[in-house]
Amino acid sequence: MENNIKNSEAYLNSVLGKESGFSIPKNYFNTTEDAIEAKIAEENFTKNKGFKVPDSYFKELENDILAKVTTTKKETKVISLKERILKAIPIAAAASVILFIGLNSFIFNKTEELTLDSLSDNEIENWLDTNILNTNDIALILNEDIFDENDFYFATLEDENIEDYINSIDNTSILNELD
Image: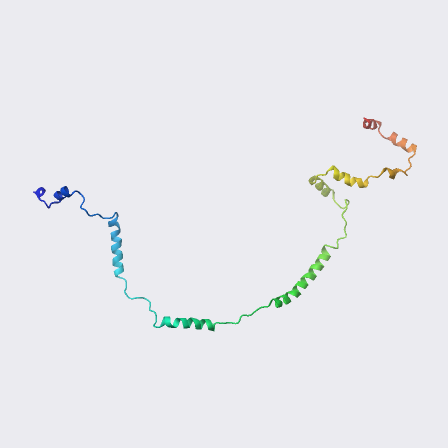
């Protein structure tokens, strides 16, 4: 009997289709509860305001600010550059005297000369290990120490001395040098 009733739900679905013509947004029922709670909490808020501005506050505000600004003028102390310089002059003079005495007593009064004899063997070895000597360097140094032929001009060598010298030398070394 229900199938024949025109107002039944099954009959209406068959005629109209499954959609009723109304639609709701997605996740509508998920956010509905939060929206209802927010409305209820909003209704419970107090309607009166927490702060009240005194009468004629804005009329007197400008005058109050100007009164505070004009009364807080203070004198500023100006320190001149001349005073600072005059205070620094004695300190600079004392520092320069101490520096002069210190430099003269510790640095400039060394009378010790450096020679090869004053250097230790280890210092010379270390210098030779770390530095490379060129033949030009050696020639410049030895050029000063080598005597000219004219230096031997006045030396007299006797034949006997030359013969003794030749006899004392190993003859094989002389022959090797000639080759």
